[in-house]
Length: 89
Image 1: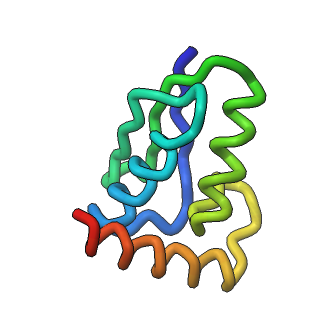
Image 2: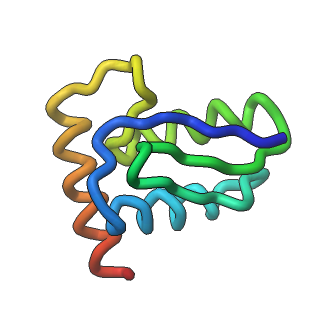
């Protein structure tokens, strides 16, 4: 199955690199792509459980789904994820 999710706090290629790297490590998740211009993450998944794991992982990284609470700690996490993504690029 394929999903596209709109997320918050996506700022740059560093963010995209972190998201792609971290989601690709998850079992049942493949073909991860990030569209910085539209704040979208697309990927293939095997089950609804996999989809929920992705949503949780994105939130933990600081990129909650649009419509979810975007607290200050999540915004701060996104800056850290962004920096890590830039370093590993």
